[in-house]
Length: 482
Image (tube, rainbow, N blue to C red; front, top):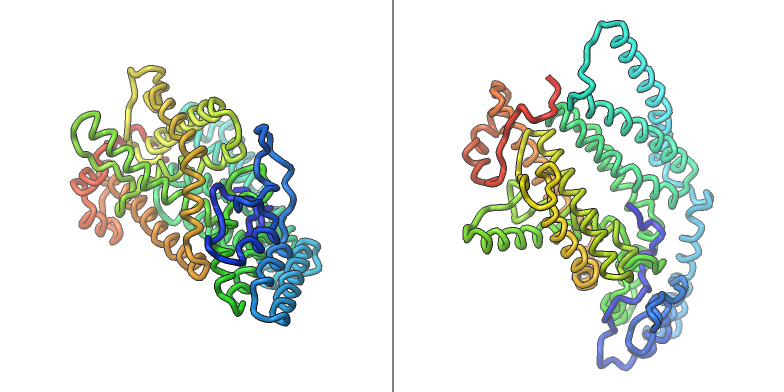
């Protein structure tokens, strides 16, 4: 995940955004913040020839002058502007090592560094020992078997994860917030890959506790370490303290949050934006697929992918992946965006189909016999659909969606996102556990544990088949280790 360089106060003008009309002070705010007559930041707007103009770095000082001009007294204006300028200077020094992180954070960094450094030789030793056992004939393996292939991939992911953890720990020890946040974003997909491989090889159990804890800590640290988000919180705190609350409302309605400050991409790829993109993608994707199936076969079918709620995580993840991969192409030719979306969407659909089969023996769709079918997991028709969806998402949906996200009040932005994250996480975890127990029942594994009995009682085979109407389970297709 990227976006660590993006300041929380996004001065790259959002399309169509403007200050509240009818205010005598609107023009002053626009002028002080460096905006044009239309309320859009001119520095980040594309030129008339279609080439992007040079993006001037937006600073808190410009906004402080604009908002301070709206306060009641000269003393209030001066104090507010001076305080915001001091916060800006303080934020710029966060990455020079002078402003050390809390002791507990640096202690965690030391432990992470030691764990990363010690894990690599341990993995190499275990790998060498395993190879020696095979060469001595004590262990026989099938190099083409799915469990062996998944195990090899897991070893590679673990080595990469350990190396990144060592560097991440060093950055925490040196109190380099920006670099530590970047390495936290880099570790997130590796941690997710580790968890998915562990799920495919061993099923749902305590084996997922490590990746879950690590992902939770990485999300928390990325939010607290990222200087851009820190600047946003500082501005939010000072705006709340201002005597004239109208200035705070105008700053929120100016649609300055969420845009990529560098001007290279459209949206800032921070956790808050990514989470809400995922949620909206889950809901909108489910609606589109349900309507498409109804129009095609004149039959309603539940296409949800989680136990509760109108969510299809496949489309949510697809929306996030398309946004991350195409964020810097939002000004490019629509044909390029279409083909890039088609390839990315097709590859993602192929991977999801393969992983569901490897982890749970589940077949959710089969495109065998269709035009340009690739193993029945994706096809040319659906790659075209992905291309059209990606084009519409980047060119039309994303600007309006960003404005919708910005409508979340600053007072509840963090708390609401945290609560919704927990609810979504509970839904995902319960779904994985229900699928794992469903797989075990179909495989003939005795359901003696209290957890498995709970799911057998409340989420039995008939319930699961009714909820996930497109899924069938064949344990012989899975990659579970015996």
